[in-house]
Amino acid sequence: MKEIAKGVFHLALMPRNAINCYVIDDILVDAGIRSSAGKILKSIAGRSIKKHVLTHAHADHQGSSSRICEKLKIPLLTSELEKTGAESGLVTDTYPDKNHFIARFQQRYWAGSAWPVSETIKEGDMVGSFTVVETPGHAAGHLSFFREEDGVLIAGDVMLNMNLLTTSVGLRLPPHLFTTNMEQNIHSVKKLAALKPKVICFGHGPVLFNNGAFEKFVEKLS
Image (cartoon, rainbow, N blue to C red; front, top):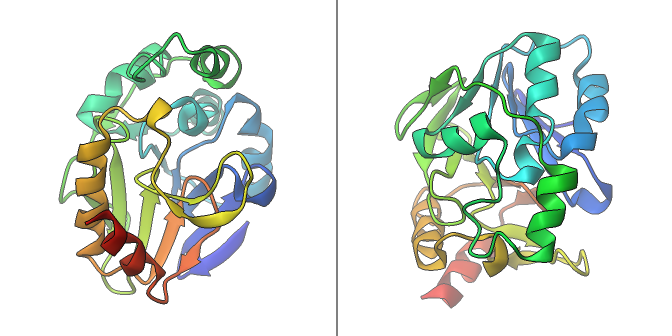
């Protein structure tokens, strides 16, 4: 686990940052796939973790949520629209084609068990030192988290910083296969750009210490 800003830690759960989770202050953000629990628990051992929050309830983000919450006896937080997926464990139901073989694979092998949501959060709420930003599109209730004082952004899957097939690094939109509403997601990308983030943390791909690459990416979407 690597500290990338004050109180912000990046944990790569698969090689080449293919799936990531983060600790912000004393809060775990996302939890990878079902088999990620051991690595997460080992990495945060000895650290005080008081809450677990999801950017969205897809299989590669809530996969270990139930095990983490049960083991640490901490509450799970989601947006109102992601609560159903987290509490049912049926996390591919909102995909454009939930019967696609990749969706079926994720549901069977990656998705975690159902777990109750203790609290729902919305735009403007605080998660530790970060402000909740509603960024729907990839998932209907997708959330991002932004800290204005140093420009750190937890972007989730609003955009990726890698090609999921080749693992080559570079900003791109999430795959249509897993995205509920791409037009709405592009609007969320632009909403995040207006915050002028300096450090961007992704669900997939390495952390970006922004040198203008994000702005160039957004220009191409216009």
